[in-house]
Image (cartoon, rainbow, N blue to C red):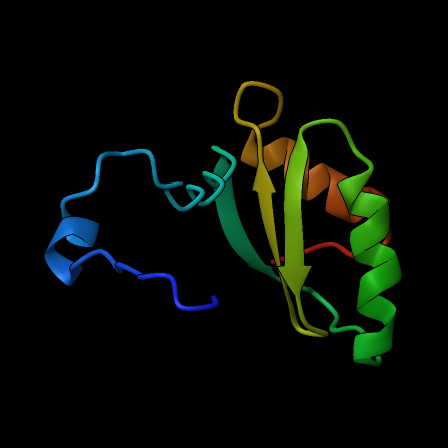
Length: 99
């Protein structure tokens, strides 16, 4: 900038600028589904047992999300593919029935 005149836009013109500025990316919409928290009939011995169990459940068709602790598990599923009874059966089949 060897002596050139520099003009900066006014704050007002920045606020009124056309939509040429990139709009912030919209947050990803959460996957639609039905979710329920279940209590294990027998709690897991340690929290370290939860991740392998969650991984096994996530592989099942219709399961969207799995989270929880050694005492509870929250499962989100696609209601067009599974109902609550089917989710309970999946949990029982993994050796971890719920109340």
